[in-house]
Image (cartoon, rainbow, N blue to C red; front, side, top):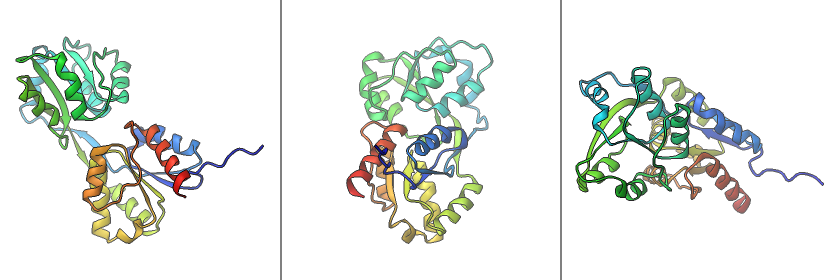
Length: 259
């Protein structure tokens, strides 16, 4: 009996993450017989200290909780800490990958929400924190402030500190232009609003809108989906669970049903 052909076979899939984060994503696509096209639409670099960062890092014991929203936040935050610095605060993580990054550093995670979006996090987290308690949220320069503002509405002292900035690598811009010009993409996977913004900046500047007409658009969650739709893209796929493996499963299900 012949093995069933994967619906993803031969499909060229945009993987918008940097090389380190792209590897498991690309391997998953390849396992399903797709062709991974890795073009990092995001890169990260630590911010230059603006006078706010060092005082926060020097006074981490003031906080009851530290909330990590991504593995990039985890990696950058701990790179900034002195070695062997122990954290007295409870740790919350949004997402399995974020929790795994913390566990890899032997940092115990006290809370992970059932859904990996800010609004759900706040709803589930509020019973664990009291009015007047201090919470720290390290973040990137483009991160939303939904968690902090929602916690403040309930009397929690929520401090945000920007520890890294997001940018679009020039090499990726050039590579994406080449790929779009040659119509070398079948499936566009977006893993954050910023990946959508950066992708569409190249589409708009190069006039490549007609090159997208046959592409399947897949977004990892509702925030990315709303951003894609704001740019005029029709989103075909969004998984119920906001992870890369579920995104690929949802893409395959879409292909099985519609192609």
